[in-house]
Image (cartoon, rainbow, N blue to C red; front, side):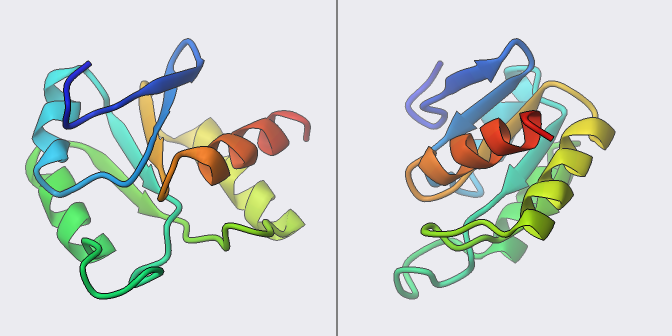
Length: 115
């Protein structure tokens, strides 16, 4: 683990992290991740947050699959949980999932496992 990737495993091939930067995508690829899922809406806490487009460009440049599934931190709908479960089924593993703190991505993962 590096400072760019403060990871927590929720499954053998799925990790969650707090907000990641475009610079972290190359490190994710070096660590063997094949896919990245961003659960944080753009500009959730202001303009200083990296945009999904910037992170996606860096992820693709590093050879990673990238998906943007922004969800509210307070509530994840059944449709969002189902969409997340589909991503977990379909994306190449290992998968790195992130949001502001990692908590909402963890909740999404746990809810998706219960489907």
